[in-house]
Image 1: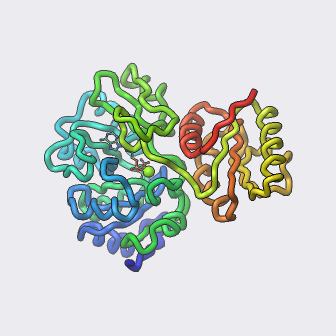
Image 2: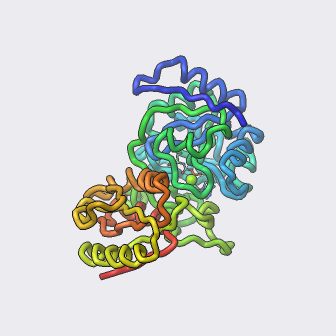
Image 3: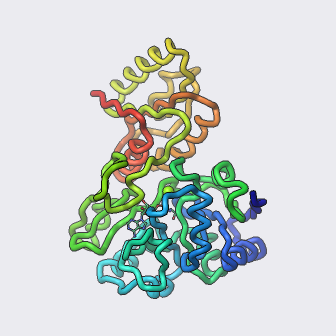
Length: 350
Ligand code: TXA
Ligand code: MG
């Protein structure tokens, strides 16, 4: 076990702790840091040994490639064979920000980072601390979400410590993240650009700038499939200890169904946690519950989904029931994608 250092940093990006954290990174260590989406676990993307430490700490399968985080478009250039026209347009529009772009990699990116693929995923995060860390360490940072593989992604440094304390060199703690769900991943190596993972930036926004974009993800887990394009999509995801039941549909039908489930689980003495929209909460007073905000504000559900799964888990419940009556527009689509992947059972009602 290592002693994991914690660097507390406020908005002001004080130089001393950040200098120390970047020194650990430039010497081949692992440091978790905030981005606008979730906390990432960083290491030198060009140093095979450093990258292997990420896989080891997370217990991540070796064929699941990492996203490389850079501070400028210049840093990006040496990592790819070329920057396609459409990539350049998207970079102008969405970087820094929660958009990861997949391009053909150059020889300097090692196999471990890309899981052996000929492509590399890159983004510039929109978080001052992340950018400072990349600049000061002077290297591109490979950084998957800083959770144990299969667990909900971390939206605060506490979550990182819960999962990875003793397994990584340091955490930069700058409080809660803003978005709460990982970046949109778009592949620009195929004829028609493909979204491999939904996020805050949606298909229609991307199409405004580069024309047709297709959706190449679905909301299921495919343990046996060989054909999934984004290797990460075939593994269990975002799962708390407790079993997760998602109830989707029109609001009053969802409330009715959750009541039914509770009666049934109650008979079997199960400890239940509820993730409820604000509108549903009054129907379940006295239950162990967590609010994911108003139904019409999916950005709130996005911010608190992973947080809520971890929160209910810490109360040692056996089953978490998620109220899926929130709006699926905008980032809502990505929230549904994550919660469906986390679910052991999905019930659709109308
Ligand atoms: O918001 C985010 O993207 C966060 C923060 C830390 O930046 N990072 C993150 O990384 O979510 P991770 O490793 O948890 O998810 C990366 C996803 C995985 O599904 C992986 O399979 C996919 O991107 N990916 C990475 N490189 C790829 C490539 N070359 N081809 C296809 N998929 C790739
Ligand atoms: Mg992840």
